[in-house]
Length: 131
Image (cartoon, rainbow, N blue to C red; front, side, top):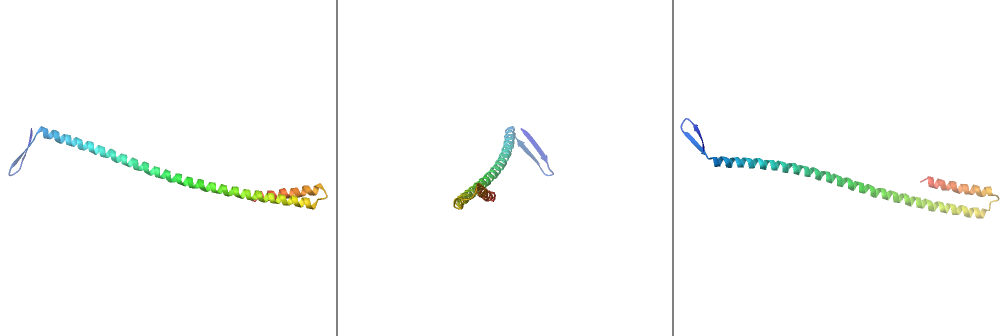
């Protein structure tokens, strides 16, 4: 048993604390320190989880943007293919017209036929090169 005394001008107060009480107070303080430590660890864990969540959200947003860009790229490629198909059809029409003109005109020499074929190839090159 520990006793503490305090003297004042008028009276003396005597305080008695048992060893069991001191042990109980010590256990309480230790438990409080442990709980503080656990709370600190929980706070750190929560902060880390919040950072991870923020990163995951950013990553998800970037993936959404990437998917949108891929959809746009596919749409552009589809438009390019459609334009090439139209030009190919136009080239076939020009070639067919040229052949019909060649048959009806009946050129006098092979040089005229070669010139007409060169003109068709030249026109086809212009159409394809214009894309």
